[in-house]
Length: 147
Image (cartoon, rainbow, N blue to C red; front, side, top):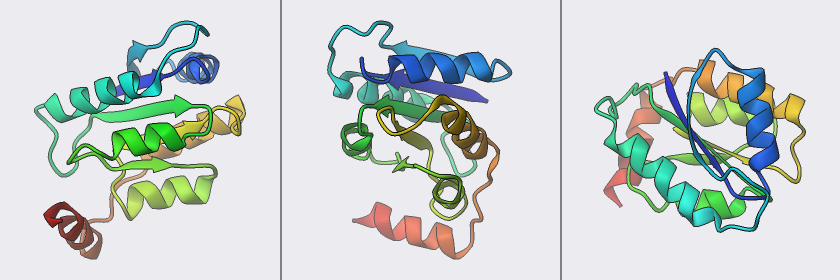
């Protein structure tokens, strides 16, 4: 599974911790790579465009994204502007599981200011390993996509 990951300057340390703790996954790191101030929309755009360009971007697609900024809100807003991207700001295991299983989230957003590395690793693993339930949940996403 390809996982596109991006963070602004406030999320760069958490991003590095996640990648180090989970070397078994194929990470495509779009940046940033330093704590020098940068703008989160750059990385949200890159991750979302890469996911949407994947040939497997169909129901059950394997490409996913992770975005990290200070609060997680900016990345969530930026990512959800793209049709076909379902970005979910997650802060605990129950929300993360629900985001994948019920809402088919293909981008996990984390708040670097509120999420310690141990929790972040757990959330990323849940995000990757949880399957979408389909059925009525797919119908709801179709309603969202029609708007």
